[in-house]
Length: 151
Image (cartoon, rainbow, N blue to C red; front, top):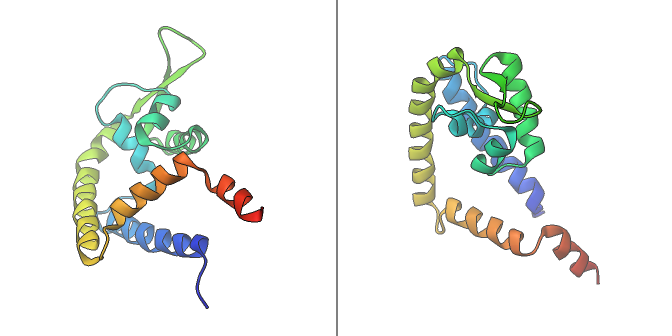
């Protein structure tokens, strides 16, 4: 029986995230892969709002909010009030987060090399296929495609 698209995608994510998680553990890091988009967004040293992090990372604001909350709790980030709008919180890496960056960047380089290796083994690079799928879904959502399929 052929697996559905959702099942295949979940399995792919399990395979990828599991390996990335293991690489962090092998490097002696107690770090979750889901933190990476936030860490990358803040690695430049400039404080950012959750909205700015979401935009920079290419994730939804609710996903960024949830991840930031976990990272604040674990001590990777610190929050401060914006000097121009006290209602807005700006986030930056904590000292602990800053100390973590060199090891993380080494893991990220290894992950990027592994992704290139995977792309090279496929008839169509996965990264290119995913980018095209995302662009197609931004043009016409999967929701809309489902609605049309029901007609």
